[in-house]
Length: 317
Image (cartoon, rainbow, N blue to C red; front, side):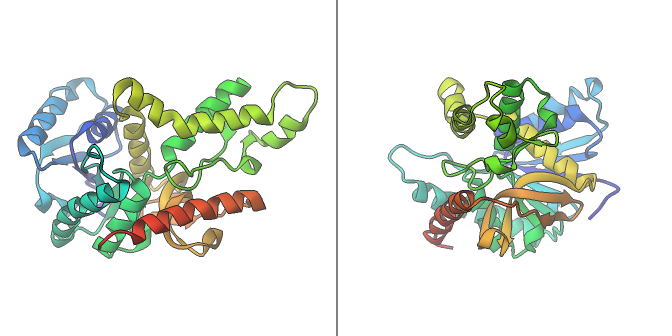
């Protein structure tokens, strides 16, 4: 990995991609070269100009420009935020198939360029598209990552912090599984600082309840639907989540983030890409952290993994 230049290539300059680019520029110091690639080259050029014109107000001293797949050769990270929208009456599998063809048109020239860094996928359904990227690129599994349930986990910590009136940074909790309807919160692993929330709920001296936890979990699961209903799309939150993952990689932080990663026996699963806590550093996924789940939680995880496996198996690769 080229640690001196810290070069990121963004493929797809829609709302998600540009929310990431905007967050990247404003946080500063994460990378010093950002390339925008899009099938609409004029849009990529316009977005690069717009960002460059604001650099005088930003913390970053970055080189930002529109490019093409040749620029991927010496990049550290390729962020993929490209994809097609679901058509009216189109099945989820039909959408997956069309996005797979889009990814084929992206991954092939990226690999041919000589790229030897890390793929970070944000396109939905992210777990399956991350697996598609892995299959098409033939890269090592540690170097193919999806945003997974990183945003869902941030939503959860925000809501729990609000509920317990505690800074969300002091809430230790994860959303795991598919980034979708089968995701869930392993309550057995939720902690407020070093105290298990299950202990807090069982204490008769307070008014906190397990029912409230279930409501919060449902809020997390349906958050995207509510945002889309209100403003047609979600992009700021995921843009910041992508930025956080890129920062962990380029900074070799060894931070724990809930990304979509390939399982190799963890959680009794193999081959599936799914949202789980992982240690993320310079070379991608350093380790998948296996949580000590209850039997009920294990069953929920198996069900979520099965949904992802079946969806992937329906694709024509």
